[in-house]
Image 1 (cartoon, rainbow, N blue to C red):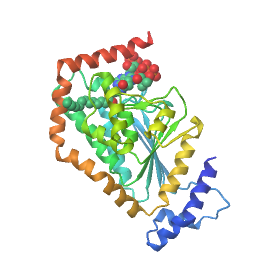
Image 2 (image 1 turned 90 degrees about the vertical axis):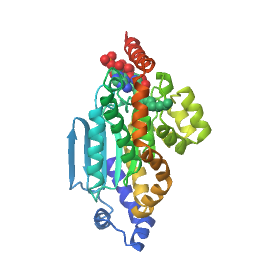
Image 3 (image 1 turned 180 degrees about the vertical axis):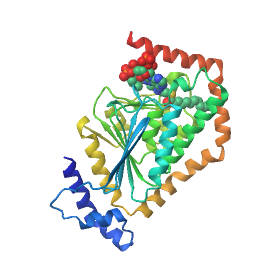
Image 4 (image 1 turned 135 degrees about the vertical axis):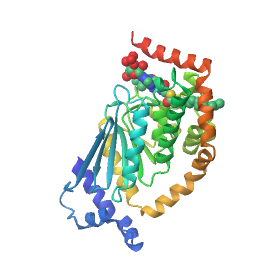
Length: 311
Ligand SMILES: CCCCCCCCCCC/C=C/C(=O)SCCNC(=O)CCNC(=O)[C@H](O)C(C)(C)COP(=O)(O)OP(=O)(O)OC[C@H]1O[C@@H](n2cnc3c(N)ncnc32)[C@H](O)[C@@H]1OP(=O)(O)O
C-alpha cells in the first residue's frame, strides 16, 4: 500500500503541478529526484532519518520530502511542558530542512491523538511555572499555525481541547472513523475558557456561529459530526488514516511552495498578529485566571472525575 501511495505521489508531481513548478523554475532537489524515477517501480527509500526524543518520534523521509511526527507521551499524549518544548524544537529543525516540505502529525498510540494540555501543569504549581507553560503553548501554536510546511493532522484517536488546537493549526485534518473518538474545544466542560486565539483558530476553520455553539457548550464531536461541521476535512477507516494523509499530502505538495506559503500567510497572519501584539498580556491573563481558587478547584474536580470514571 505504501508503495502504491508513493507511485501516486510521483504521478501527481509528474502532472500539472510539475509543469507549474517548472514554469516558475521552482523545482526543489526532492522534486528533481522524483522526476528521474521510472514510474513502474516503487520509490526506494534511500534517505530516511529519524530523531526521537522523549514524547516525540520524528521520521523524515528526504526522498518524499515528508516528515511524520508521532506524539508518544503515554498514556494519553497530554501536552506537558516537556512535550510542548520538544515539539517546538523539532518543528524548528524540520522547518530548517530545505527538503522537508510536508509534515504529518499523528499519535504513536492509536485511540488517543492527544488529551490536550496536561492538566497537572495547570494546578498546584507556581505562577512562574504557569507562565512558562503558557509561553510554551503559545510558541507551539505560533510555529505550527505559520509553518512553511504543509501540515496534515492524521487524527487516529480522541482529540479534545489542546489536541484539537494542534489539529486545527494544520492545513488539513483526516480523522479515523470510530464513533468512540471525539474532537473539539471542550474547555467550558472543565470550567475554563478557551483563549481568544484558540477561538480564532476555530472560527477560521468552521465560522463564527458554529464556533460559538461549539465553544459555549464545550462540544466534543464524533468523527461524522466533526466532518459535518468542518472541524475535520475527511473521515476514513481507521487503517487508512496514514495512507490517506500521504495521498492528500501529494496533492498539496504539487502546488509551488512559494505560492502556497504566501497564500497561507495572507490567510493566517492577522490571527497570529493578534496574539503577537499581546503575548505578554495573554500570559498574564492566563496566570491570573488559572491561579484563581475557583479555577484551581474546577481543575482538581475534573481530574478527580477522570480518575473516578475508571473505578
Ligand atoms: C477570561 C479569559 C481568560 C482565558 C485564560 C486562559 C484559560 C485557560 C485555558 C486553558 C486551555 C486548556 C486546554 C486544554 O487542553 S485542557 C485539557 C482538556 N482535556 C480533556 O478534557 C481530556 C481529558 N481526558 C479524557 O477525556 C480522557 O482521558 C481521554 C478521552 C483523553 C482518554 O480516555 P481513557 O479512558 O483512554 O484514559 P483515562 O481517562 O483513563 O486517562 C488515563 C490517565 O491520563 C490522565 N489524563 C487524561 N487526560 C489528561 C490531561 N489532559 N492532562 C493530564 N492527565 C490526563 C487521567 O487522569 C488518567 O490518569 P490516571 O491513570 O493517573 O488515573
